[in-house]
Length: 469
Figure: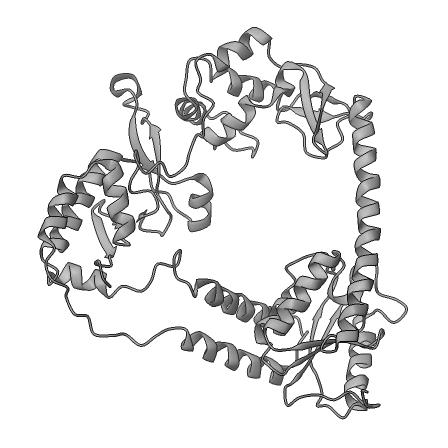
């Protein structure tokens, strides 16, 4: 039987408080939670807890700055204190049990003082699961009522979702009607698909400066593909409710003849993707800013009338925004020729300085097995800094936790090892020179090759791993 005072291992005590915008009263304020948790620790003879708190953040959110920082610093033997179940999770049994498993996987335990529950005991885990089940039941009831309401609204002719197809808006009766500000732009964008591929239509719209759903002329084949599959434009908006497709009538922006012309002869296939047999450098090539190139069929403005369509590697709009990149599309044939020559060179002479540099390159962040852990530490350091600026963590605790995270980050970076050139692989070099697109893609995967396009538009070899290493 458990003693009157909770027993604790040699680990630390980490306390956590959270309030949403409406949970500021009746013992739920941050100050009240902190005082209760500190008093509980003192009563049990523990050290003063290292306290973390998230102000005005919903418990349903998976990403909470203070909770993320707490979990990043949790070590085996540590105890996490919270006022009650609702402080750590309000997203149902899945979220709750995921949090508990995460704490246990890191060697810690969770104590909820209001329910006198300790997850390190079998009884505590059973009771906590029961509480979470009731919470999940209540949440499911709310979702079911919401689903029934949306389904009934759709059947009555109202559009039940907040987001609407581009070119439309919801009126006071929640019915779809043409948006006078965007309807003509949507109609023009769709008509641009008549007789054009998605890629050529996107190029045409960007050249004309027509605003897209973002308000800027940043049209993409993917966006046009989505619009071309939205039947609201011919008066039949589709709402899917629990597998049931409900047609919600709305004013059409196009005639059915125009709709048929848009789709005439068009393959309903994926508009992007790796397609290694056609674009072997996808997944292996980045620009000078670090953004990934992917294969696509396109044409430049000046060459559109004379050159027709050709294969290119380009950077998606999302990649350009993330990496602050302005790089343009590049001809696929030119890049793939450079790639074959460059890779064949280092395979023929692995003692070449270029080969030695690529052999000693660090792992690609996209394939590094420790990349997620490194990112967690980086996020935790960022969260800690933010908590300190907001005054939500004591300076001594901040400095101590920051030092621990820095030490963990250094431990993840192995000391550089001397590079021993592998033997020349002349036959493989010949295979690279004579390879088809599909064969080149397989060789790049096999050798873990990474390329970068330099500011001077020259292909650089960043990494390769010879067979057997």
